[in-house]
Image 1 (cartoon, helix red, strand yellow):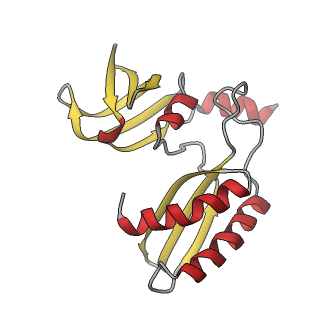
Image 2 (image 1 turned 120 degrees about the vertical axis):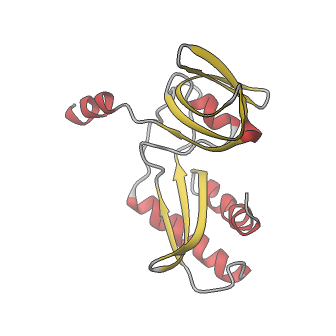
Length: 170
């Protein structure tokens, strides 16, 4: 993780947690509109709720977290130039970073890209099978792979559109 992103993460995480959410991802960089710091927040996993949480992140939640984190960023002055802070839910293609993120979504489809690779591969698209001891197991192309979490460059859930269409129709 880049040093500037890590500093924002460490500063923002307590405020996000105090608001009742998990900090999922921090992005920072220059975009066509200027410098943007982006936080993705989600409801915490509940032990008996399965992969999908009982609640959803709403606009009011994002506004509250944005106000608190913005004030903390201004005081800490760790972003040395003008920036726009954005806070949102992670979306259906939610990023996966930590072992607990992978464990929460066992049974779901995911796309994983590695830095170094495993068994001659760097890209995996399959079903998460397990996450423990610093490794993720994914079933892909008829076999199972164990991937060190430290080697993961990027990982996201792959939305199950049929399930989402049925959910929205209910």
